[in-house]
Length: 93
Image (cartoon, rainbow, N blue to C red; front, side, top):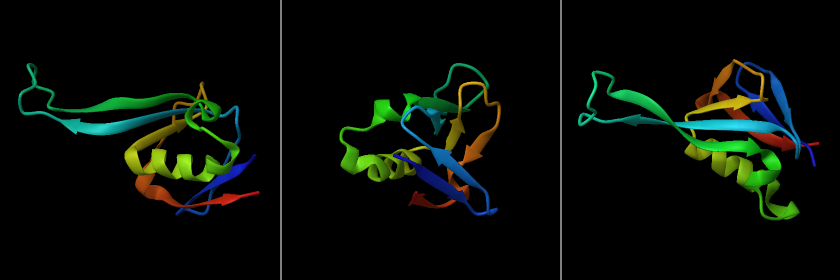
């Protein structure tokens, strides 16, 4: 299995079953007890294999994760996050 996340800047990021992903969703709360009302909740952390059910739904699961998340980090030691609105599409190798 190999999927490519195609970004609007022309870059492609390869995803395989061992690729580690972290996804965040934007949250806002006026009821927050501190002055920081805007924050991100981690909605997924693990390898791509952790997030899929069958071999047939690989692309579908990645599409769902990208649709639910606002930010995505690919790789355990990666300090760069991708805004999911920068995703143009997903292709298979």
